[in-house]
Structure formats: C-alpha cells, structure tokens
Image 1 (cartoon, rainbow over the protein chains, first blue to last red):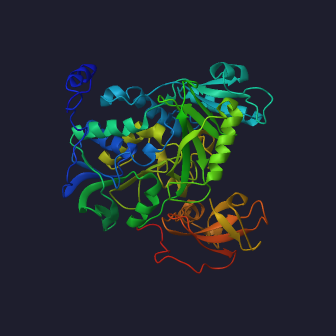
Image 2: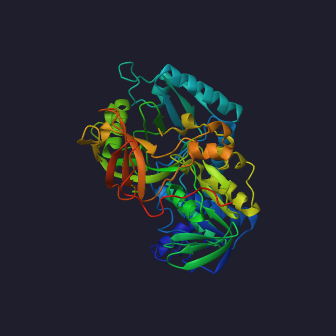
Image 3: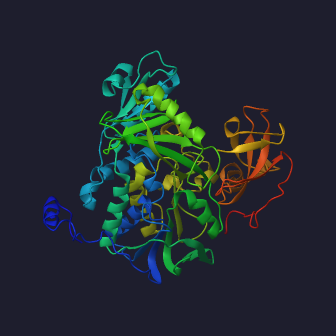
Length: 417
Length: 103
C-alpha cells in the first residue's frame, strides 16, 4: 500500500491523478476465518483494524450487505464528544476520544477530526443543575468540561439568540473544548484501507441470512451471495439490524430500532465554528467544511427499519433550530435522510458475549454511536481476540438487563428517545 | 407520515395526534414476587423488534387519549390493522413467537 503524503499528492499530480492505486482489494471470501465480523460500518471496520493491528489476528473477514460505511456511518451528524455522566460510559467514550486525537496519523488517512468544541445548552434551572453535575463528574474523570453562563455562550456563538426574549431562553451550557466533528465517510474509508493493508478481507454485497449454531455455539454465517463462511468467532456490529441477527441465532436483545433523521442545508459561507446541541428544545447543528449546516433531529417514536422517518419530526427540529438561530430562517434545506438506530433502554451500548458461544454483539449505540467508533472497535477487538469482555466493555454486557446494573445515560445521550 | 384510524374515535387522523407506545401484548408476570432475574429482565427490557410485521400499542394522545393496538410492517411502514385493547390481531406473521435464550 502506498503511503499517502503531500509528496505523493504532488507526484500523482504530474500524472493527472490517473494512477492512484485502489484503497482496498475486493476479495472473494475464503471458506473459513478466525473471526468474521458482520457489518462493514465504522464500528465493524474499526474492530477489524484493531484486531489485526493490536492483537495480530489477520485471518478476518468483514461481511457487509451493502457497501462499506453506507449505513449509519454515512447518516450521522459527525459529532464527537465524551462528556458522559457515569464512570463506565465516560471511560468508554474518553477512550474513543483519545484514539480520535491520533487517528489520522494512525490510519495515514485524513479523517478531518476538528476539535471545535461542543456546547450542550441548558434552558431551565434543572437543565443547568444537570449540566453542573455532569461537568463535575466529567472533570473527576479527567475529561475537559466547563459550565458557561449565557454571556459566555453568546461570546462563543454570536449568531445565536441568547436573549431573555425567547420561549426557552439560553441559561448557559456545558462546553467541551476537545469535542468536535470528524468526516464520517473518511472514518470508514480510513479504517477499511488500513485493515485491508493488514490482510483483512472486506467482502461487500454479502448479506448474512443465517447464523449457524452447533451445540449452543456459533460456527458459521450463511450468506446470500457466497453461501457458508465458517468462523471460530463471530462479531455482529450491525446497528439497527442487531435484533434481526440475534433472532437468527435464537435469542432476543433489549433493543428497539427507530428511524433517526438528519438534514443538511445548502452550502453557505462559514458562520458557525462550533457544535451547538440542545436537549431541551431538541436540535443540534454544526457547519461542515463544505459549508452546509448539518442538523440532527430526534428519533421517531415508532419502531421502523425503513431508513426514513416522519416529516413532523423534521418540522419540530427545524423549529428548534430557528428559535435558536433566527438568522437561519431563510436557509434552504438540501437533503434529508434517515438511519436506523438500535436504542437501548438505558441509552448505553451493548458490547457483549451472548447466550450463544463464540458469538459476540456490539450494538445498542442508539443515537450516538459515531463518536465512539475508534473506542468501540478497540474494545470489541479485544473482546473478540480473547473471547471475554475488555475491561472497559465489561459493564456493557447484555446481561445487565437481567441483573439490574443499568447505566442511565439518557441525560448525556443528547437525543430524545 | 402515518394516517391512523383510531378504533375508538372511528376516524382517520394525522400521526401527530398519536404517540407510539411500544410492543403490544406483553403479559405482566402472574407472580412477580417469584420471578427470576432473567424472567423479570426479559419482561421489562427484552423486545421483539422485528423487521416486518409488528404488533404495537399507540395512544391517541391529542384525541380520545385511549390506547389501542396496531399491526404494522416496520419495513414498508404499511398499517395492516388497528384493534382495541384486549382484542387479538387478525394478521400475524408465521414466526411470531420466539422465546429468548438457547441455553
């Protein structure tokens, strides 16, 4: 694999960029692998990469029913932060944050990670109390965070209506300066390219339609396009479709799949250099490097696999954005889409062994999985390599819903479930 | 956007008047004091979440405020039927009953 560099760019410029090598191979699957990862999104590709790089397991296949990074990886609003309340989740997301900070170098792929800071607005006294509690908890865990008052918020985002004249006035915010955004597609492509270079087989357009078990242990996946692929261990990282795969293996998960929508505006000149989120009026917005405003909506209340949601949800979101940013009232929206998020009752993920031996699930990230992509892949790789949960993944077992050790992150999750 | 028929109001109304209220026909354990942790956790948290036919509850929140049931395809979003609480669905999928756990 050629290393990407400034010099390489110059060199290829001389031949009109016609001789770039392909970023990854397109192999036929082998009959058997040490590990088969189902799902070629960011989390699945990151898992494959860290399995190969950290644990030396290179006989791996990632099977993906569509194309790499075409599911929720391509459909999120690219926000990265780690200001979660409870120790378990704060450690997990901060682990991811530290990996983000060196990711472009590590992958030799520019993921355009931009630490432009994230504001979580408070609009009520209770919001502000929760924000203070969360920021204090974050600082005790070594995660950066500050509580800002209205004036300080206004200084960071001059175009936001912070006056007392609004229906839900901005009373303050939590501010995580190290948080920001990353280019979502580049994350998937960077991991794919780096995993491929380490010998991982990325098999696209290969849909798993059954998980074969023998004596309570998973032994193979059956695929529509390539038949049986055997594996010593199987890791499922399929977000919204997790319940469907679990059902193939004969158990159920504490998940419900909902459509989550987002939309982008037409590109405009740089106007917003940070990320603004509000749980209370429910909207979040940032501006991409292309110039379009990236706006996230809430989930639709009903279960759905249709990768589209209801227009009323978009309307509510846009109302909230206009309330905060009257200046955006005449910006036209360009595109709108939905992804299928697998929401967990406690708004925390599941990184876990299952009732079926040698079968592992990494799911339940719900509305906020993108930010965790490197950390999720890193701990799930360790889980798959050793056959038991990584230290950071232990609290996220699916069996916590039977023993009662839930991790309630509805406050920090940021999107209304 | 759904156009939902409320079996109590006997009218089609817009989705915004309604709220989805989760999986239908979940029976509360008859003897909760003697449930195992597994049975209780399953009752509280584990859901069917099918890709296809699903029986779910909705509430006509900005209308008669009554709960009712709906059979809906979660892939095509087509509403197959609505029926009142206490009634059973007419339309069911083949593999509608799956018990959790293989061990």
